[in-house]
Image (cartoon, rainbow, N blue to C red; front, side, top):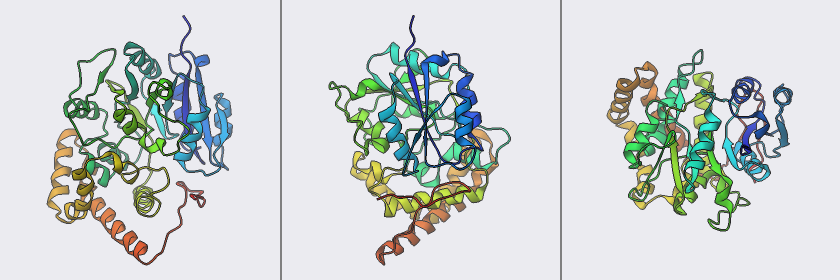
Length: 353
């Protein structure tokens, strides 16, 4: 029986430090390699990224604007697969049947338009800050979301919060009808969509750039089912130092305050899909941070769940984000718009106009 073609969309820019691990995990899948298309949306790498990709049969496509979300937009429109998996170049499949599980779940229920990964797993040999990222994502996202990204917690939190149906074919169909506030979901970490959501029946327009940060919310709004995988995890080789993570946090604050018109990660691109009370909640984040009690309580609660001491960095990180929010709003009031640079050691200024 012929297997469905699956496209893997992977934005890259000087990703040599991690990309081979990611591509190796794809090559080790029990899904036929001839039915897997790997698209590298490259923002102008000057390291070994493209050579490594070539060794694994990946197709390199230029991303003139470098930023990941633009790369994902190009990949979405270039992908030939029936199903499209979004996997960043620092993310690695833990299970050899990760692709097959996604395809089987889609085929078991024709109403499913999106399948979410089972979360991030502890990645041996990496900086402890990765364990914090797995648990909290980032301070503001956790405050808004109240859902951990950790693989042993994420699926259970989603099942409990969104009234999931009984497990079927390795996953749970979530029910968002009774919940007005939606979680922050990005196109990464192995989250997968079916191309059928772009058919006239559903009417989603893949030529619309704003769909990249809002894909999950548009799918829910259309009444298309979303499922979450069980016993499926991703290794995340994210920030290799706390310093680099602080740079990411500052980058996200800057983008969300000064560049709300561009597709990006964070709350601003998704705010219109949230109820008024959730929109108002964001203004209370500084109070949450400076109270000290609330973030310390969250640190203790998450520590009890997994035992990671790094969780106690949550309070100073909340204060750091609050400081940057205040600073960037001062810049905005006085008409100063900071330049934005790509992640990584060999950074370059991004063209976000």
